[in-house]
Structures are given as structure tokens and as C-alpha cells.
Image (cartoon, rainbow over all chains, first blue to last red; front, side, top):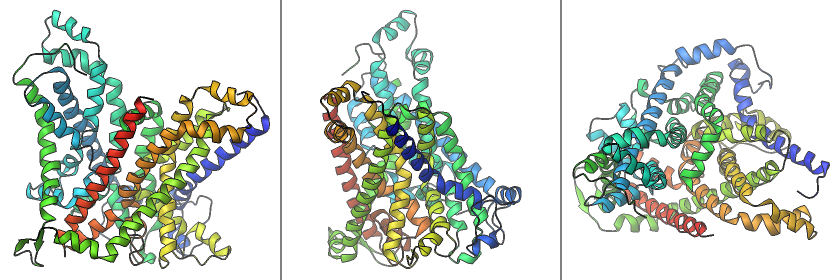
Length: 282
Length: 293
């Protein structure tokens, strides 16, 4: 920049801190509320400073759940969410990378039609075909199962496209070299292409894990048993319509726990995540 | 573009595409086709008989003022969410783009809300603005606002828009920052030498150069507001009070859940599909054009 005015920098720092405050305030409130006494919150007397019930509330949330109901402990919900998110991330990467490999490295009849069949799925999120999908999953007896939670969300092409684009940039010489070494198609895939795709896979994994962990409408529909519930569905069921019965400290502790894994992943893998995001979306 | 070096194999490529093809056909095409077929059928209340009624379900929908209201409301929500979140994110990105001490820290502190799930966003905001126990509601009342989003439809709508925009700030911030950093600094220096003040530089240089990013984000934000606000709405207002926060996706869900009218719910799904395809089409054409820049 040409002018280096100190004043403008202070303004920039100030605006950024206002932004951070706005972004962080709801979470601060949640953390504070999760350490307080429910009676105090229900009276509208919540303090803006942490209370003394931290261990008590979190112990109850993770191992017991809301009292006075048959709800599951949140620890179990987190496990369900974790399995679902991992299945979606790993499953999508696995089936996408091999189909992208076939489409880029082989010539076979119906190659382009197959590519388009996969490509078109980019357009429609699961929300718009929610009831027919529900019916099919029910017909296949996959309600209340991890397969039912994950498979319909695996059915889209984002990852395939990303791998296809990446494979296009891999130099042809690599394939010729490994062919001279006597490697067949599977060997080439395993020994050369997979190691080269590591960063792409990691970036995708971060994004897909968050996507899976944060799913809501789909698990809401297909889980009927409380022990198969994901944390996102469980948290809404904790908010009872009569305010007096809602155990707000437990709800807020659940919100904090639901945020931890994806936020941790984003912050820890910031560089990868940003790269993956810009590459998949643009 | 095609690879020159390829493998020869008759069966292997089919085996490799088979898993994805199977998942996509069973869990994407089959339900999508079902939705289209279902939208042409009329089922009686007990599901005993079905008849083919052509476009009756669609005609019914468009004759229904409530559906029209839902469309208008959804677009209003989308634009309100997109515009408020985009402008705030742009302001933050312009500030974070300056050579400041601690800019990496700022970035980290600003991007994480991307990872917060919509229902959690809903829970956080309803708690802060709950009429009887919310911390922020206290201040609103002290300021003389008769705050009760559980009864007042406009306040409920405002609550949804604020919460949904809050979550989207980080995403928009990231793309704006990437866009800003792609603009060569020499352009600004040239403008500065020509005597343009910072505000003027922003409107005459930065903003036009950033317009592709802005347009891209506008489409992404609208699609986000269409679908991802479902979790926010469901945890905060469940569509109420009345129907004041029912969006198109929420209507598909609630009409289908009550089970009364599967045909209508399917027709709504199909209309939604067409809307998304149009939006995605716009985005693709635009992204393609951008590549040739």
C-alpha cells in the first residue's frame, strides 16, 4: 500500500475485533449457560459469567442425558454422529476415486453416458427428494441403520469431479514409466495415483466429515429409535415446547459438544480445509 | 480433454464405476423419478386407490395463495440472508486483507462458524433471544422493544435471518479474502498514485474486480438459504408462529409429514428441483465464463 496511516490500521483492528465478537458471542453464552443452574436460567436471571456446575452438567449430558425422560445420553448420540460422518467421508472418497480413475484412464463403451449419469447428481441435494428416498430406504429395511444414514448422502458427484480434474493434471509419463516397470492398472492406481492424491483426499475428508456430522433433515426422518439418534437431531428433541421443562444447561452443553469435533477439524486443518473448499466449490 | 496414455481392459473399468453407479441409481435416480411420478398421482386419504391426474397437483399448488406466499417468503429470506451476510463478510475481508499484525489469528477466529451445524445455530440464537430467558432479549426489552418472536411473525422471520446470516459470514469471508488476495496490489498502487482515496479505491477498483466472486457467492448463499436453513427454522420456530417462517423446503417436509397430501408434496419437490437446477445452471455458466477472464 502507498499510504501507511496508523489510524486506518487501528480502524481495521477494531472492525475485525467487532466481527470476532459477533461471531463468538453466541458460543460464549452457550459455554456460560452450560455451567449454570437451570432454575437461574429459567427465571431469566442468567449471569454472563461462568457458574460452578461445569463438571456436574457435562457429566450428566454425556452419560445420562436429560433427566425425566427416556432420552439417550449425548455420548451415544456423538458416537452415532461420528460413525455416520466417517462412513460418509470414507465411503464417498472410496467410491469416487475409483470411478474417476475408470473414467480418466480407460476407454470403454458407455464411458461418457456413465460420466453424465454421475455428473447430474451434483444438482440436487437430498432435501428435494426426501420422501421418495425415505420410502426406498424403508423398503430396503435400512431405517435405523448406519447404512441408511450414510448411503443416500454418498450419492453425489462432487468428489468424483474433483478427482477427475486432479487426474487430468497428472502427467502421462508417470503411467508410461510404471507400464515399463511392468505395472498393471491396479498396481499403477495403488502405487502411483493414490499417494499423489493424498492431499486432495485429506482436504475432501475434512469437508465431507463436517458435512456428515452436521446433517439434520435426513437423520431426523430415518431414525425412529432413540439409540440411533445423531446429536443434531437429539438436541432439537431436548427443547420441549413448554419452556419450563427444557433443561437449558444440558441443551447448551450438548450444543458445545456438537460443535467441538467439526470446529476442531476446521481450525486444526485450516490450510487443507480452505484449499479443499475453494477447489470443490469453484 | 482426453488422456493419451490409457489402459486397455474390458471389464475392470466397469467394476471400478459399479459401486458409485449403484449408489447413485438406487439413492438418487430412483427417488428422483419416484418424486416426478408421484407428483402426477392423486392418492385418496387412506392410500387405497391412486389415480393419474396429470398436472392437477401443480395447478392446485399455483392456485393456492399459501404456496405463492411461501415462494415469495423463501426468496425474501434468501436475499435478506445473502445481502446481510455478504456485506458484513466483505467488510471483514477487506480489513483482514490489509497487512496487519496477527492477521492469521483473525482469520482463524473468523472461519470456524462454518463448521457449526444449522440446528446448533438455531439453538444458540433462540437461547439468546428467547422472550423470557434470553440474555439479548433482556436488552431489547430494556430498549423498549416489545420482543416476542414466539408470537410475532415478523420478529420470528428476523430471528431466522440473523441466525442464518451469522453462520454464513465465515464462508463468505473466506471466498472474499481469496478473491481480494488474487487482485494484484499494483492495481491499488496505480489508483493511489492517481490520487484516489481509500473509499473511492474500494468502489472503483476493488468492487468491480471482485464482482465475479460476489455473484458466485450470491448464488451459493441463495442455495444455502433454500436448504440449510431447514435445521435453523426447525429448532427455532418450527415454521411458526402461524406460517410466518415456513420456507419451500420446510413446506415439503411439513406437508409430507402430516401425510395428507403426498402428491402435492411431490409436486413441490419437483418445483424445488427445477429451481435448484436453474440456479446451478446459472452458477456453472458463470463459472465457465470466469475461467476465460
